[in-house]
Length: 210
Length: 210
Image (cartoon, rainbow over all chains, first blue to last red; front, side):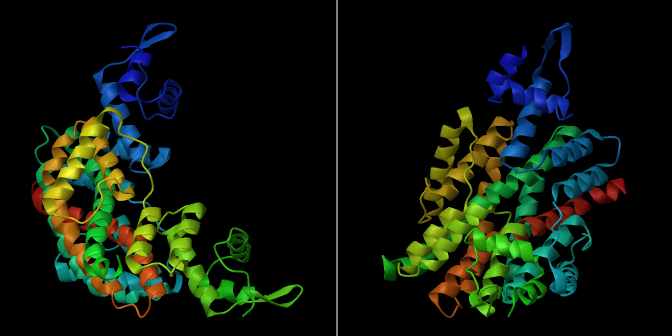
């Protein structure tokens, strides 16, 4: 298909498609004449993935490039590729200051207590430590009392996610599923948690105040 | 305290503090001479909140301004203030296109099925519909099969969150707890879900590949 058709099918503007090609997020089309390129379903699929990661997942262009490199590197064992994709999906948080050391200990204790096969000093572990350090700095260190309720919830979610992505027909689709599930899944989870908050808040505070 | 001391205590640079004051995120200090202002613990607390919302929560300056307006508007019933804070904490997602109508129906069906006292057309409901529409557009509409596992998890998390913030001594602290818990809680949840993914992935794929 021509670039105009690709744009129409995906809702991504032609200049944006050209920008993604220049930035290496989308392979160039096959040239059919000096001024005309042909795109196929693999371009369409990749373009939807890039757009979802940027617009819903909030990833930067360089973060998307790293994630796609992990998706394409299918020579390595699945577990390693998934690990790389995970690492590149977790943005670093440069916060914490004085509270960071204690927060890191809390993360290591959590991982040990849950028996998780996960590294406390991975990008995810560091992001968690940064968030906990921020809570401590805000006088909300008591929030850590609910961490195990969060961990119970995350274990259920991770099991559901793995069941879903485990149905993928090949490694490339599996990794794509993990990328999509991780990034768009964050958006799903964040939005759904707010709906559940609205419900819990209406039940607890609504009757007395409405 | 002087601005230098405020900077030292919070780790926020003096020019950044002045920028927050200009942008209305932090009240000006009390002038003790034409060139010198005095700050107290309320400034320190507010500054930590602003910094956490921006650096860990990823909120924009204008989003922080809206959230703070909700925190300060304590004349309204608690439930309404919480609702406003929630709405302003949920960024709009301008995606979906052709898939959005079906995704909105899926959100309405989920809310009805769970019996949630929450509006499907709230900011959170729209954000969820946008994320589901993106998944459908990516050929991952099957992800909706795990939505109830996510909803179970979110109900547990919301109950834990409410238990925590319900201990706040007054309405202002309650709303601040909701803001912090919602925004920083997203960061906690996102990071912890990745750790749980790493664990689930290691258990399922690790043995065969390592």
